[in-house]
Image (cartoon, rainbow, N blue to C red; front, top):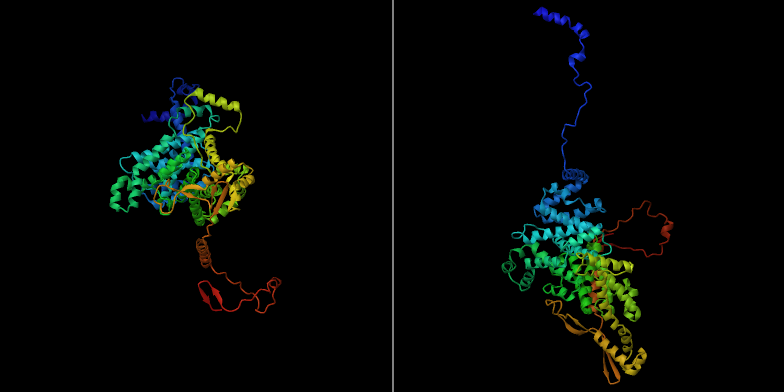
Length: 622
């Protein structure tokens, strides 16, 4: 056996030479093509393919998010989970704006679905994140129709969570953020109504979405949210109980479990200010002031803790008074808040809302100039001088009266008034009616054709100018009456180039213009609509047959207030100087008896100070 194996081994070389490998191996793998016709390809449906593509796109987008932004979102989420108001405030007021300026000044923040893995898909934080996301889109970018619809859906989710949960929610947010939520909610509603009223600029897809949109951003839904927050928190009962001096236990029993939470109480309070704003947008100025019945306009009110809310409240209250022809109350309101802004300006220059507050203040100066021209007063000369500096040309025309005054009033009114809206949308659900509107606008072929929003603004403008036009002869008539103590009616009519009948009518207009309903001292706790008829002019007259008898009462300047105000200003300047470091004297490089240089010769005539050197807060020996 061994010999046989050995023989085979020795014969290996012969085998390698004689064996045909092609015959031994057969044709396996040789000249045979792989046929894949009998193999079944895996079928991937379109939805799965789209999902895979979206997932890959999300991964790519997620990788583009800077690491510092990811860390910020994680930290922000942790602060919200722990209800850490300090950390939430820092992240909201500083971190968000810092990274917006650095990374997202001209683009959107990452979508909520993209950052969801960072926050463990926390639905509450994602709702709050979307609120910030859409606010950024509205303020920095141009929202499309999807953004408008989705921002409404997110607001509904937020308010449903707050109002329809089982009991009060365990969430704490800073007051500034709570005000911004209400303010942005109303702003997006106002912007949507303005955009919705422009029928001719809509694409077919937008027309279809608006037709199927239903109650998106409807006035009813917005008012329902604000009234629900106000009633849920029982904020009016809370304000009344505090005013009556009730104990904390009694207040807690009155307001219930929702009203005891700062979140609900402040949302309810800010909803009152929001209702004031919405009613003004809709043109109901009386109802706007009526919802403010329990809110006092003073420095102790809770709305003063948020500067933007403080300024907005006074702006809208003052405008209500203008439209109700209560110019003295409007002047008093604007003077109060404009003085506050002047005092606090240095502390808010770094605030992210500083620009908005400055713009609102500028509009209030314009409204103040209008009121001051219609009802001259010396309530605050400083504010009056600033208004005249900013709007000197318009103020001169308004105070002078005549045909040029109407144009000046119109210019300032359109600049300073709120954005009025139309509550009822165009009939998008009726294609025939919409096509008729589009055809009518196309036939007009005028880019200046007023939309529903401008129509509502011009309706209020016309009502205001109607009252102004009736008072146009008043400045001229007042200037003549101030020159006399008694004057014949015929002579006065000759001055005015009018007959005696027209003169009597103009004098009745002057008498009416010098009277106004105004809140009087001692009624601070009453409704903003309450007031008494007072005389606003220092000029009074009576008509006795054909003679006009004039009596002018001059009010002396209030020197005490002027001295107190300037004393406080001087004291502040002195305190600032004391807090500044003393300048260090220059070190002498040469001998004391060095020859003065040419630059020193120019000051040789100045008096030489000798004696002790006096420093702020003490005396130093020389």
